[in-house]
Length: 425
Image (cartoon, rainbow, N blue to C red):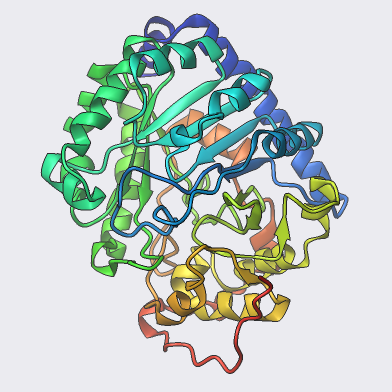
């Protein structure tokens, strides 16, 4: 399987792009994690990987979206992006995830990508704006991988994404990337309407046949103004998805990404471990994309490394999360996120300014942490090694987690807050 995957990468991707991937994301990414570990030992902090939502606008209206896609357009300008990336590079970072809205609606996106050939970008996109010309420019850049979202069959895609002919436009953008030998991935937010269609070997085989080199299964998170909790997976389905990912990694010549488990199959939250935090289109620094409260900003007069290192809000988030669960705290214990925001006077960092009300109305859900079940460890030696080196909990749960603090979301009572969130804007 590993030889087949290596052969695919050598034959189906531009060799220069493959070199950029191996050097900027592979070697330099490994080095950024080592620097992160050294900082933690010194009592300092800067995440080795940043998610950056560069724009809030999008041409789709997806069910369950927490981004203010219909609000007045806001985007991080080129100068601010360049300052942020330059500072992160000085801290050793070399890998950035660009989100939206739809990132390709940012008119200066390529100006940003081309200004930093020494790092690697993963762009989360619906693919609708990737014409053949855009794909050719991506190939010329060499340091970008588009991760194109496919959310189900034609009918399901239209239902989930609020527009007609969504899948057709997405597949056209995907094919344009593949025709130009761009390193391309496909991601899916697993939910009730696509679970049976896309979590199957036949779908993986189709991606391989097309030339897709990696796939990423997210798990639907019911958050935002229209959370659609009926789409959330059951704990049993989440476990089925985990087993499927572990099995496919040993069976299919395609890279399968996940973000919720370490090498031994123990649940983790990448934000709680300090592996990553999120910057929204207004420049606010949030714990992760679905926790839309912030105390800090990239537009602070202090250098970005100082902002991260001195943030009491983010520090408290990591500690509070690690004390209560190895899963997703905003799904399991929204009351703790409300208390955290209130404790630090964190602002609602959305354009709609309803994040607090949404949090109070949220029904607790199960996430990836299931203490009553045996973990499903990695069977692939390659993934085990990679996770042991770079993707684990960095000791945060050993330091803080007490299983007695964990509460089954099914048993959690709705929060009864006594104070209002301080609004700073």
